[in-house]
Length: 393
Ligand SMILES: NC(=O)C1=CN([C@@H]2O[C@H](COP(=O)(O)OP(=O)(O)OC[C@H]3O[C@@H](n4cnc5c(N)ncnc54)[C@H](OP(=O)(O)O)[C@@H]3O)[C@@H](O)[C@H]2O)C=CC1
Ligand SMILES: CC(=O)[C@@H](O)[C@H](O)COP(=O)(O)O
Ligand SMILES: [Mn+2]
Image (cartoon, rainbow, N blue to C red):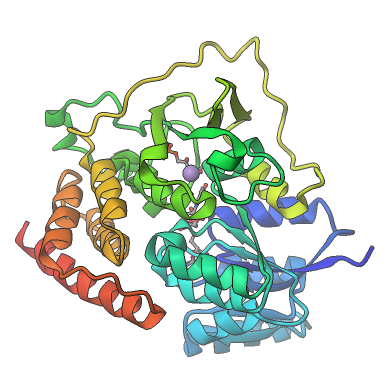
């Protein structure tokens, strides 16, 4: 069997590194064609030396020139490209069969769309692409015969728990509800007063998962779960009222599908992203991912709670934006990206993230607009509004 060509966009991040860990276990199956990073050029250099891609992509010309020189010194033929257009180019290369979309934030949308337009097999970690442009992204996937496989652990669990021939109709498949599990994050048991004092380091200390800083803060605010509700809506054609969120602090059950006859199918596993990555890479086959089996006897109990929307309003805001439809989720996402960046830089309190998002949803005019250009314009407008709001918090 000829190895499949893979482009890992966001290779230097948490998902990217885990993807390369799985890929390295299967040199007979996968050949790395392209890797991208943004600021972590040293890490990208090491990855290029190990995986010998045809192309690497970095943020700017200066980094590209420096990296090209270092790679030449090593005798490597890898070509270094830079900028957003280069990400779109490598996502559509004829040598690429599979694109891992693992850039964080709305910045990952154009390259994920390019992969869809080129009819690639897309392993989607970048949930923000679906939050910003879910309808358009799903239409593009269908129109160009691309294959979309969810990598986000909850959506991968749902994908595994759905009928294999699921065609986007819950009723036709006898499904009552999609049940997303949430760990509750590092502040699950914090009082409202304690939340006033938390730091970026506290927020990035997730109880179960090791992840990038932006998604870690989203998990702490429950915005991650809100983004995942919107992601599930588009991936599985599930209306908001058919999506439930259940807090499950152990992160062993990664999500569930409840059927009409009372059955609930779930996917369980250790909290290790190599499992959903390997599942998506090899589907419908199963490959070794380097993840140990669950040890049921040492696991202790699995528990469940209601999410608390008073202390964690971001989840409610995300549901409300999904109900509003149109560009409201894009506005929610843009405001959240601005607020989270400000929090991580020490310019905003944790509790003010939700306030900035709420004010932006109320302050920016919302519309039913559908084109990518209109959504990106709205994203820019929402970012400017949110940045002003951060300044006045
Ligand atoms: N981490 C996890 O376990 C999970 C992550 N996800 C989702 O996967 C995506 C990636 O998350 P994660 O790996 O944690 O994030 P990281 O912050 O660890 O990595 C992000 C990657 O994107 C690159 N990047 C950042 N900004 C830009 C930009 N403007 N243009 C191009 N590339 C950029 C980074 O480059 P560099 O580091 O070189 O600057 C890095 O390679 C997110 O959408 C997240 O929600 C979903 C489920 C689980
Ligand atoms: C690993 C993964 O998929 C993350 O999105 C994870 O789910 C975060 O956990 P919580 O948002 O449930 O805390
Ligand atoms: Mn998730």
